Structures are given as C-alpha cells and as structure tokens.
Length: 235
Image (tube, rainbow, N blue to C red):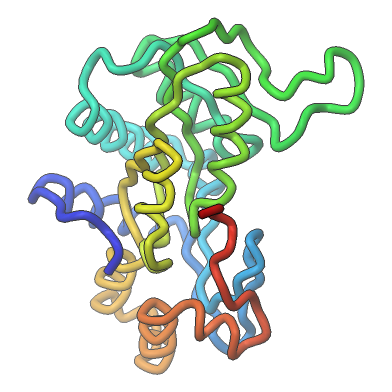
C-alpha cells in the first residue's frame, strides 16, 4: 500500500469518502473489459469523481473532509490562492477556494491557441502560494504539467490536493516530492476496496481481480495490453 501512515481521523475520512463514491456509483469495477486510463494504463477499476458535482450533500461532505485534511496537514494560513487543473479539478478548486475564502485560478493542460494564449485563467500574482487541486491522481504525472505552468507564471506551488489517489503505483508520491510537490488526498483504491469487500455489491471474483491489480498494477496493465512502466520522471 503506497500511502503514508494516517491518523485515526484521516482513516475515518478516507472510509467516509470511499462510501460516498460507492454510493453515488462513481466507482466502477470491470476486470473482464479493462478501462484505458488517461496515462495509458489498463485498469479493471475506474472512478468518475465528476459525478460528485451532481450530488449536493455528497460534495458538501467531501469538501468538509477536504478542508479538515488541508488545514491539518498544511495549516490555516498556508495558501494565497487555489488553482484547479483543467477540467475536472475546476469545480473542486472552486469549492475549496470558497471555503478557504481565497482567490481561484484554473490551469489549462496547454495554452489556448488564440487570444492571449493563456494557460492560466484568473489573476495570479508573483510569489502567490498556490494550492493545486484536481479530482484524482493515478501515477501523478498530470500534476507536473499544471505545476510547471504555475511555477513558470511565478507562483509558488508546493502542495496539491485530490479527492482520490490511486495509491498503487510504486514511488509516485516520492517522485512528486522530488519535484517539490506534496500530494494530499482523501481516499484511495485500498479504502474503496475495504468498503466494497463488505458491501455485498460485488462478486468475490471481481473483488479478487481488483485486489490483484492493486498489488501489481504495472504487471496487470502490461498483461492486459496497456502501459508497462512509469517513465515520466526525469532522473
């Protein structure tokens, strides 16, 4: 399990978030027909955190848990603004910025091809301490694109928050730390599996297949025709 040790309250938050995501059917298990993730991995599991935007009580609870985690792990005065990653991170950044009473920006994957050619929308001032927010992280590679854009614009960005972190790709957190970025997250596939295993909603074979992926996602991906190595971090 590739997550740092957690306090009892953090573990409770992780299980609560996992239950919410299962209840709104944001979690999908499909080992017989694997998904292809954005980063090229083949996976028997898929999570759609975008569904949270349609469930007001669910999103309120998730943001409650997010703010508590951010304040516990970083502090009450650690940021000057909140930036969402295009596109799924934008609503989460808006909710977090509103709760923290901070300005917000959003970051494109690449500059738009017209007008100001902007990659960052909103007012961003030099040396602002920015919290990068997205919905989820797999191996963490997409965070580097947004991180570089913020830093090139003069911002200080040392922390990112996601609702969901896969928690299965070896050294992903350490590799992000080498880039000067600490990833904070509410819940992982391990937490979801703990809840799913006792829910009775999934067959024992499905649970077994998912557990096999979680223990060795790179091999599972390669066996099923997907990406077979983490190669985005430069030495």
